[in-house]
Image (cartoon, rainbow, N blue to C red; front, side):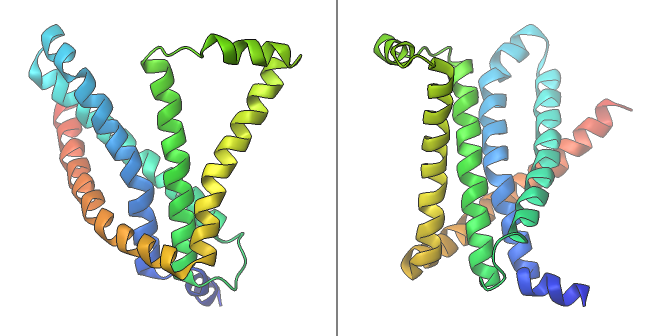
Length: 193
């Protein structure tokens, strides 16, 4: 009974594809941040320490990928049961990628030390409730950029087929990052012996 409930929601291949799509943006961002910091790390200490930092980052990205995958898979049980397992994987993949991109943009905002333009700050102050207005705008923007692709995947067969093709292509890249995770884990174990 329990297995039947699970197989109606996900296929084994679908769960693997969902995991890879949850892992991909996290690993890409980890690599970007690691290579951004690699030069000053090698200048400050040595190349082995820089590789160690990259290895720790990859292991952490793998653990984070598992957590994001589990959350996405559990959310897949909340959506209607009449959705085909492939469409459920597509929707959860789109949500995972879109929310990961928003998390990256938030970190980039602070890493690049960006500032809001003065006219936006003045508009927020003029509203009388700047923080509340800012949160409402952010929630509306994140909801729109997450829900529009979801509805496209649900309502358009063409968008769904395009997404499936993209998932197949991106899965190869995500598997390469998983190989890097194994190498990173080996490096972390060697460094801690």
